[in-house]
Image (tube, rainbow, N blue to C red; front, side):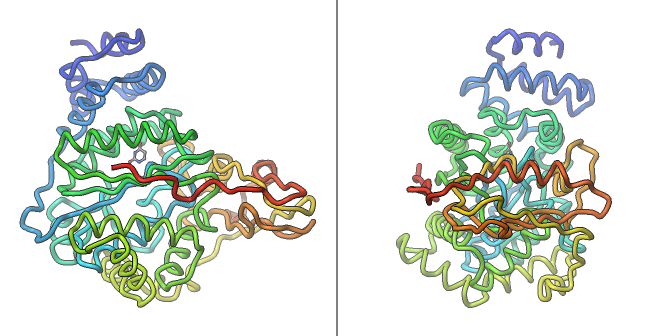
Amino acid sequence: MSPYEIIARKRDKQKLTAREIDYFISAYLKDKVTDYQITAFLMATYLNGMDSEEISALTKAYIDSGETIDLSDVPGKKVDKHSTGGVGDKVSIVLAPLVAALGVPVPMISGRGLGHSGGTLDKLESIPGFNVNLPVSEFRRLVKTHGLGLIGQTADIVPADKRIYALRDVTATVDNIPLISASIMSKKIAEGIDGLVLDVKYGNGAFMKDPVEAEKLAHSLISIGKEFDKTVVALLTSMEQPLGNKIGNWLEIDECIDCMHGKGPADLREVTLALCSRMLLLGDVANSLEDAWQRCEKALDDGSAFAKFLEISRAQGADISYLEQPEKYPQAAKREVLKAANSGYINSMNTFDIGMASVSLGAGRKRAEDTINPRAGIILRKKCGDAVREGEEILEIHCDDALDTTAILQRLQQAITITEHAPTQQPPLILKEIS
Ligand code: URA
């Protein structure tokens, strides 16, 4: 088999065999296929798609690129959650300790920022000392001892996704059902779970803008789960505006700390509780959704989720004094505000543009080798439906001193539409459940 011919077959809209896909991915890991060849393959797949057999073969090839973790000696059903990606989507950071605090083990393998969307690993790494690059043995120990572990893809677990993910991030090959399905499900199957709750985002800040496409993605993810004998539940949730008020790595951790003190934005709390309560059901520790929801609310409000977050952060090397006293975290060198050009109501937000503005501020990568500024990002002072007066602050940007912010502020100004009348209806935050 030649890599050239496999790329050409996908370019020409032909169906690839499982052998071809497996060969191509394993040859990439042995450096017999180059980054430019894999990128051409990704773009051909992006443009011409894959059917369900090819998606399944791609997922298997990713899983087989590393080892699969056996957690059968950890008592109870192991349940994880994964989001298809969004702006300000920090749910995993609150959810994982919350669910673990309620007795369901959460082995979580996450990703970094992807395109305009943020990534759990980058957020966790903004906490001084937090180590997400742990060997499998240490990950297993964390899950056994603390009921959760928070790591990224490694050279041992789904290394194919680790390398391909970084290329997709900077080559506009992210928003594609086959590539997202293989990327997410390979990580989740390799981590040794019994059940999975998916947060499939729809809207202008999601990879699937249209709810119908989001639902197709949910079905693709669920059917891979079925093949591997995993119980998968998906919620379709809105990304028509950023989730919560803060975007950017440390800023999001800061908002999660508020949420774990029973405060913070209502939308973040609602999506978190909706996903956590499904996880308790899959973990067999609650009798009904209502029971699960109430227990999750209590764990947020009585400090148990935060205590578990401190416990796992300390275990993964973090200096938890920054979590206990977030005000001591060093601030961004430059802060500027965007003011409303006229009075009215925030009618809509172009969430993709807000995500890209956050990347330009330094919260994400434009090239695979870029480093992230953990302090960079955006604080929204207004959300959709809110009234504003001319000259009132809509948002604040945080970045390095040297950055010229003129074009970024212009992009943000254009991303937020103010109208005279309040919008009649907001898209539902939680659109539907698919299982
Ligand atoms: N999350 C992932 O892990 N992979 C994707 O492709 C998108 C979201």
